[in-house]
Image (cartoon, rainbow, N blue to C red; front, top):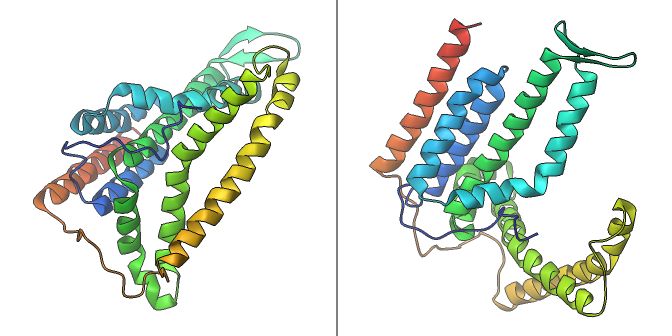
Length: 267
């Protein structure tokens, strides 16, 4: 579970770290648009190049991105296999009585797997380079026009940030509970998959109890400090767009435009 990087923030002074959180959120949205615009595996090279550029500029270790993919490896394997069985095609590679393996099925399996990898890696880049407080302020600023519709913008941004912030906390808590159960003779490694799932119950129940206790403590702490939402709230650091933010958005738009042109030309 320590491989889960969602919600973790790696402090740094790189070009990406210094960008306004609103800029990074917009960049992530445009990146997701790029990934979903692609319908063939070959054109995924453009969002992949954008992700590599962002990784280089952020100076984030590749280890964090690899770790963010480990929790979904079984999902990737399952999706890959299912697409092999349920995707039809004309170029048959293997013909059995009950199933035909086609080149189109293999290509589609690789395409969907790479797409998920790119999406997870891109989402991890946002949380790895943006602190929870900055992410809250950025989300609140971007959603501020919805206040005219009496939408609870501040509360929504705060809920999302607290949820992200609790991910590493719950991971550490689960590790402590797991080690405590193993010291009492619990076995989480041996047996079939059903036995392993059943052995997780002594971890999940204390983890849920601890989560509710931490949530209650957080609510009491916020009430004791007279927290009452975003009305009249001030910030120590004011968000300001700089020339670096404009440059980052223009580069991202250039990637999106290049992808659209290529898709139109090779349609």
